[in-house]
Length: 166
Image (cartoon, rainbow, N blue to C red; front, top):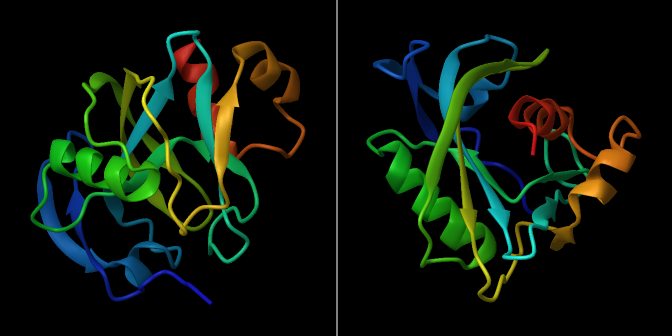
């Protein structure tokens, strides 16, 4: 069974993204609230539908819920752009895309605190979800709006979807 590597090293940042230190994934996700950077990529097709990934049941955070197309941690020594390209390739097999930066904000849950760098792109190529995911598909924005608040999506996705007013 797959699981997250708790020894993986993440940079620690201030609220503007300046690196202030480093910690392991385990330390960042144990309730310490150490602020660490993550990237999100919202993938639209040219019909305006939004691709969502389904989180597998083995994930330590929000198993089995639908989530932002691409989301992942920035590794120690990596820039936001590098992390975005790596995660898009690893999670969806997407290599040729132009990200547009939207916003960055602090997301806090009971277990962790993340500085989220949010981007969007329009992509009509083949999407090949990795084995790390439980698949994925394009949703119309109407379909997403009508399912908000029904425990179908991650709280993080719902929060961001509302914030971005897609």
